[in-house]
Image 1 (cartoon, rainbow, N blue to C red):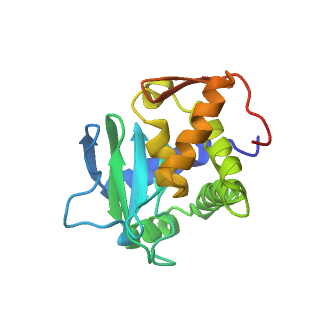
Image 2: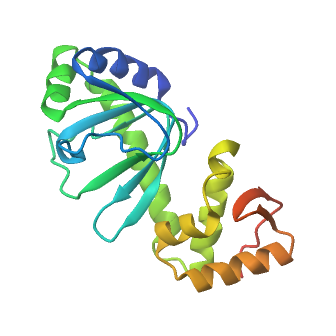
Length: 208
């Protein structure tokens, strides 16, 4: 399968079994996925429909946008998530969550280790791509890679996500530097924006 393709067949197999003992949710844009008394440190979250943003609470970093279908915390019981994260709905979302210990029991009971391996391997690949975009690169390269990531989103998500805010939260580059680069790209007709939202990309120069 293509290197960036989600293992959808494996997701469906995991979803079918994990959903049996889970707490289901349906939330609107701007709402937290989990109740206040529940944290992402010890649960598995399955997003069946919708788009969510994943925030690392320490440093207020926006880690990225997760589009359905997606699973977070699949291996949390085997290796506890030590950082504190928050998930916020960016569209109408439907899914469920369950204790990570129950997830581990489910994988054992139904012998879903292969499916779990495929899904976690894909997640590792996505993290590698993110590291390649943000680590050891200059400010322009980080802004460029983030714009290319955003243009792959569904149009309705881009229409609600401010470009400058997203890049700043994802990269921690100063707002003034980001604004300067975006202004230059717009003047050069490399990108089109409307009311702070990304509309299209013609092409992006390799260097600034």
